[in-house]
Length: 274
Length: 285
Image (cartoon, rainbow over all chains, first blue to last red; front, side, top):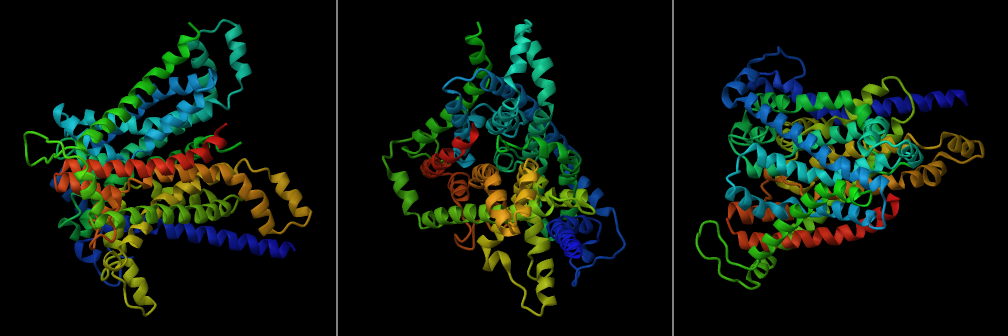
């Protein structure tokens, strides 16, 4: 019996490692290709051992000003996440602690706005942005990112706040705590994990957003997602440079994701864990 | 004051979301009934239901509807099945679990444009791609993925991206699984399969509902993976509704027809949403 358990444990370990390496392989391959010459990149059979070069990276910056796009990505995702939290937190707080009969309907309605496919709003938003002179501007992207993440943020925060026992809040209110004190000193400390993971998820979603970024921006306000799209053809034939550009575009958010995954996991319950 | 305060707190979110919903919807509704081409400035004469008629009789329409549903259905099925398996696999401690988890969830942080180009070129290229090499290693003829299996290729790319999301949610959910209950069931002689179907799956029901709902929202709008790889082709083999409407509006400049199409997408989304919200709504309280 212990022997069998040991075998099962071995099989499980091997299976998990195999699955993880398989899923990660495309990214690992992207990483390797970024350090190859163009000839090595399309070598048949594929090369796993080669002399690495850094030329691709300087070429990417020279050709398309990576830093400008990176700056745009950083600004749009951080500002839209902060704005989103500022709007979503009070709403979620109100829904969780001042429940009425309509609370659930409001939450469901908010989620249903997310059900409207982005493409359904494409033409109007495009026309509105054009009329406001906001095509290819960071503010247009920030507004769109904030609004399209808002329902998910409210939902995540709501399900986190709801886990806070109402008795604690009532005790604070009896002691004459103002709304702000109550939020700042009772709710925030108890839900900091949930707020952090809500922010993290929205940061990732905004950083990677491609539909609006591709359709509303071009050279000036383009994010990294649009920079990479510009490599689709015919430069896409240059795999090493494409890989270097891609690596530069995803590395910040992937590394960020690695370090925050524990945090992310804790808050991603959406009320699903009880 | 205490009666007004909750509403005041909710107001910014409710008002902005209401505008975000109603303004584009109203404009789309208006556009869908007029002749409006971005290349022809001037009046927008009333067009009746011509735009709708044109969009629905477009030979691409039904292909786009079925591709959309097929894409959403397959990706959800793949991510649910493998998501549960992988989450269970990494739920118990083993050497290197932390690293395995980090590797598993990495694809979720990759932006769709990189995902699309990475798979299109380095993985699926019929000559230089990795898959071609694997096929050759087994003595098989390499497959020209994007030409011969365009929709399947898109499904693979999108599943690769969303599987980690499902794994994340299921890992979170499994953390609250009652281990003593499982252990008790094992002592009572329940087999692994029985424990899985009678204890684990019911526990994961809410997490499944969440995964389905969130993926549905994002998969309706899959765009970059198609625009960058296949352009909806060959023919209409990988055109979904999102891509078809994009083609009408920003490539053909026909705002009227595109808006009619957008209304179809909204209606389709809402049919799905009503059905989903029934399920999720029950699970929220």
